[in-house]
Length: 165
Image (cartoon, rainbow, N blue to C red; front, side):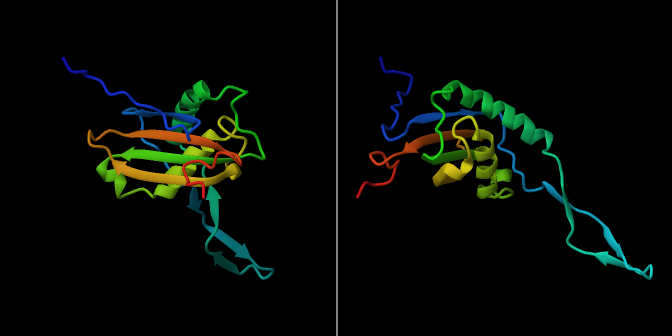
């Protein structure tokens, strides 16, 4: 009889590895700024339309729901003693599964930014600690959305996934 499961072994160069499949798309914050109509009126009452003025929109419901969901998962792995405190650097690897439609519609850097913002104050103090970021987006063979996150605290002895030359 053959085994009907797959056994995973965590890479010893990774401190934390977690994520989900099939539940929720990683949203982006690409549309958080919207243009506004602005007019300048000079001392003579002459109106001039000003261009390129924007106002920040509040985070969308999808971003807030995603943040709450991802933070609930991350908090299972990062207790107070596990949070990577400044001035320590971290390496983050994100593997993001998206639908075929989203694959061509969203920028990978905006997906990464949303995830890093969610991990702030849970996995690490601030995303400025991320000294190495490896991100891939792909269409999952089962056509499901998902996210896998690997985080490593960088030290003199541990350089993350890079080769130690």
